Image (cartoon, rainbow, N blue to C red; front, side):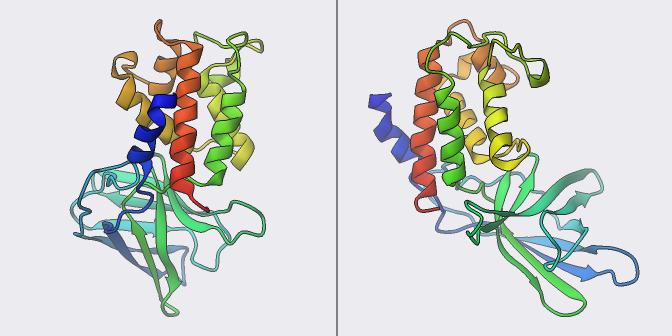
Length: 253
């Protein structure tokens, strides 16, 4: 792990791209029925330089995308919504991501595959609302550092390590814990529910893709945990490297 720290800092050094691909949505308020609806268009602005985890653009259709939301800027978070086209849809939540109770937090869009930063969520008039967000993966925060530290503490030894983990964590043996299930429990403890696209989880996936391509074929975290060549030291090194990356991305957040 000691020899990887510099590399990890280089990989995760860019917490925010200097140029971001931005999606702008204009929504009409449905006064008679329910919710808000409208269209989203993408500004074709691409970031230059090396693609890092937080500067990589997530999948988004080229054509304009329809959007429906259950509430507006004055609604309590999270607010449920749906991006959709004729053959594609992506449910999401617009949520306030806080580090502490007194912290103002940051607005994010949370989908099944990504967490993205919101630049504007604003009532323009009685009938129109604006939503602007970046098509990039949100950087980690202190919450993600805490999640990864909690997981690392569970793998001091291999005594309770479950070498045959699965995605069904409800059936995890009481005496054994796998990487994915320990991570899932740590995210739930921090946020009250598991988020598949949480930066702490995404950081681990990115490191496994980078360093252990031969150790997964399906579910990255489960396959890596269960691979015959994976050791407890591999898991600890992976988590220590992810903590370095999360701290670099988080800065003061």
